[in-house]
Image 1: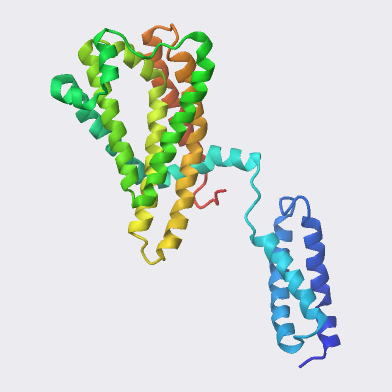
Image 2: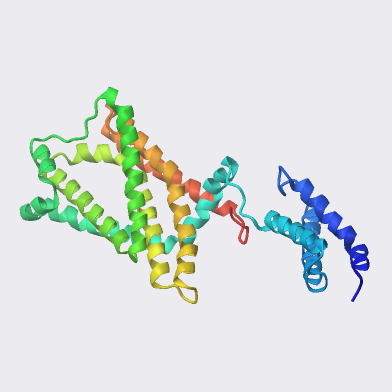
Length: 324
């Protein structure tokens, strides 16, 4: 076994090198390090950890062991800590990370879409063709308004800014409820999607029956494509949580939920800016005096623009590239 002085003399240079690299990383982190410096940092860190193991064995009570332990701990935190959230990081996620997360969750999102739109289609046909089902599916207050040949969608100009805030806040709340329902083994998510689909389809079918379908459709079309897509994505996030609980695989259920929860949360966060846009359109454009033709065109154009942006960003992320 080497003496303490021999041990120090043979390794002092790399300890000082690691100390120097850690000092350089203060403030800006590792962003300004070259590839060679990053490799040097990782290699030197592993060497110091090895030295620490020897020091703990041969010199457990010496101050050197405590010093090496502190140095190795600092390096570990620098190399493995989670990156600090910044606006730049959020922007990177919204322009690339979200697209890949959405592609990875495609099956869950497709199932969520079926849970929303299949009941909506059934309810639309039922409310359009059956008086009994129309009364069962559509709230009485809405039916009374539509029976008079009117809709509840007129919003006075001075109230539009307030209504825009209320609308997109409510829409985000619905998406979070659909997402959070996943912790009930996915049953809460299924319930939210199915009930909202039935209500949506029933109201649209009743509107068509009472002759106000075009007016209501013109109001909904300008924002509805974005809004419903975001709710579907949030529902897909909830199904990811439910699947992690029901099918943890080789992982512990807690670990599976943690892993699935990160992907699910990122999906919901990625829809938030689009929900804000949909709320602004619903508050300002949908109740405006623009021709219905313009509103019917605006919704699909906004939706296609968003989908095109997602596809473009997903293709920009090279296979195997690490996402934020």
